[in-house]
Image (cartoon, rainbow, N blue to C red; front, side, top):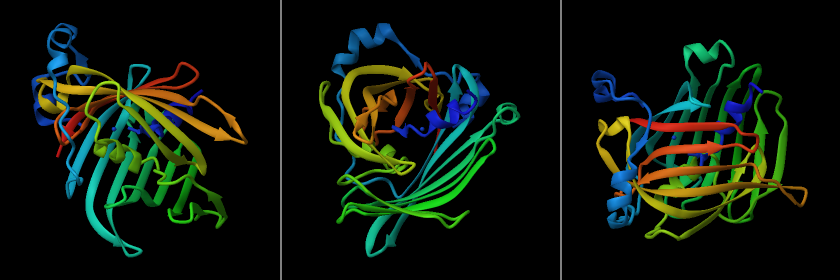
Length: 282
């Protein structure tokens, strides 16, 4: 189904999770992440997972190449645009854009732009804005989150419809979850992860585990091996009391204190697979 890539991309907050560097484009380095089993098997156990920074950098821009079933379909760019006061709270302004390339846009065009406000101190979302074009579907909307009362307030700017719904404590949206994972103080293989998310006015539970330590090459670092750890994430929505398995992902985070996501494999429930490879850091 042609809508599959667009729907899976929304997992990047785990998605959730995810650019072409000068060195990558000029030296012929492939935009495919490459894991080295020989190095991983011999030395990965010695990788030290550093504690992350307590705060995100004031400015940062990470670009990823997106592939669907191995076919390049576009780019994902995640940007930290500074800190701003929002409703009396200091918030990171986080921007995420997803666009299909020229070839795939002729089949199914995606041009999505999201902006989120993440509380600097409490590390949860306060507002999420979306301007979405996916094939013939379009949407301009925003959700304001009352994290104290556990309520969310949705507004569709195209038809002026509104919807209020309950949320779990300290919930993340599809953009802030990406950065929330970067700030988690995980330190060893086997550590568990659990947090709450919202997408399309639906509550999700995200559970995961620090699965392994690996060495991986990505174009953003000119093909040099990067020390990483792999987080396995399950995305489970709750719909009218039923639990439905919506997707899984493996995310390779740098073990350095910056915790940049280097590579992600996202698998849907119907054999759909999307990868995101870091190709540029600014």
